[in-house]
Image 1 (cartoon, rainbow, N blue to C red):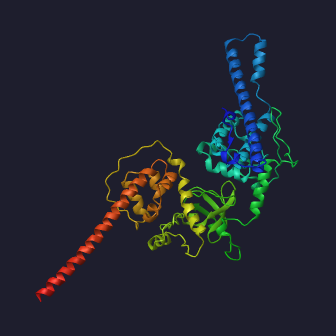
Image 2: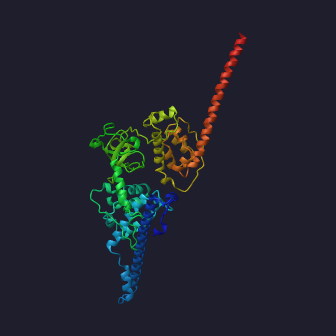
Image 3: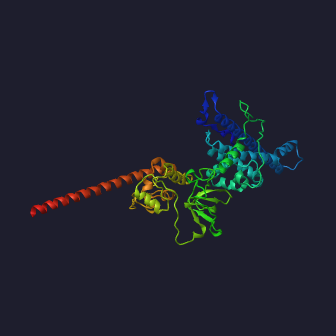
Length: 477
């Protein structure tokens, strides 16, 4: 199981960061940190090879013991030495480098490519799984507290792990699933020591000392947490918005939709996840999940647990794309529980609403990456126009033969909101069927235009007929 042959490279954008006198500080820092990351991969690779050799030697030794029971030979002594597992401190050292690598991958997310940080996460989890199995379970790995993960590393893992990787990650406990800011005990500082003796340069050409990249990231995130929390347009003081801790019986809420955090103050959540509300305000609530991670979540995707079994439940929908200024679109948003934004508000707030739709839809993108199967569209009488509610949209999608993941993803929109999405946006949220949805929408738009023209023609003909009738009547009189 190898990772060092997958060493990432600096992206062209990062490499282009040069000035007349040579590379700038951003490029030099990224170049140094990529070298550190690659040496972590080297050590992980070397240790994995060592474990493989140990396993092979143990297997050969066991086979020899089964075949004969003679006096142990010098060859057997050598095999026994090779079959002896590495000492515990070597396992701990590699576990530390796994954690350090995750924080570096998150820090370098915008600076590396071929492969990207998101792709490398999956490759790193393969040897991590082997490490956990070799040590008899997650116990030893879970005890490794230093280095602590950064908040950005936790977000990177939350947003990219598949089901099997997530189970392994959560089995390692809070030292792996929580950032340093949320751990109760003090975490000792960490400086990696590499097996080949390599050390990153300690200072720049001007003599300024390089700071440890992960420690630097911890400091940056600590400063960000001291600033007002929540999206820029939602930052309000307690005097304006007010905050209160809900009563004990009403602190548990269920998420109605997925939500992806866009900064360190927000909390990524999944549909059906239970959260404890710590503080509530008008639009963003501070919540804690089952991993004790704390962050802000939009209030309109949360439902009280106590009300789930109620016969009448009104689910507040996630934010929707509000591209058109038509009155009926604004009204439909209002009817579905979305707060209307006055025209006087800044354009970036409208863009926030647009982004939230794409983020919510894109969160289900991974589950749609299945072999492409294009079913034949069946005849359907299900209507779809700009006034269609979400129920009609979902029925129309089913009638056209789209898969249930696509129906679930797009069936929360009104007709106007669905028609407002272009081809690229549809492909982004549903890669397998986005182009076909767009094609069917184009056909449906044409049908609506034809119907509109036909109606207008009928109106014109009716008026002409009325004029003719009036003339005939007048001449008769």
